[in-house]
Length: 86
Image (cartoon, rainbow, N blue to C red; front, side, top):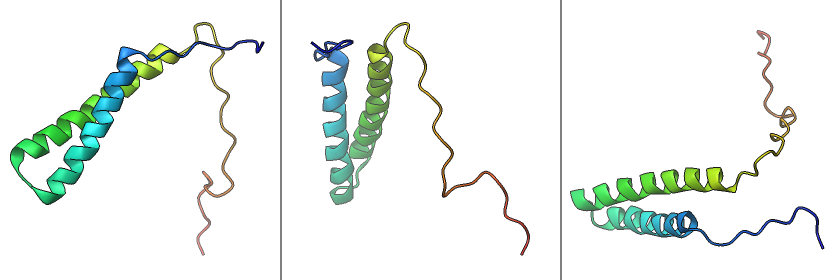
């Protein structure tokens, strides 16, 4: 047995999020072919729904009492220091 194994059963938020993602892709591509107002409204609606359902999923999957994630190490490529004047 693996210690700390969680049961990730499909939730209603996960199913709604998948539907919103597939619908958003469909309407984004349809807008390229048929640029009409109702397709634009559907695209915006499903993109926003994807954002909302993703946030609901993230809140649902958090483990109560778990330690917060460790901070990421500084990047070697992007420094917070300003370059000296050349």
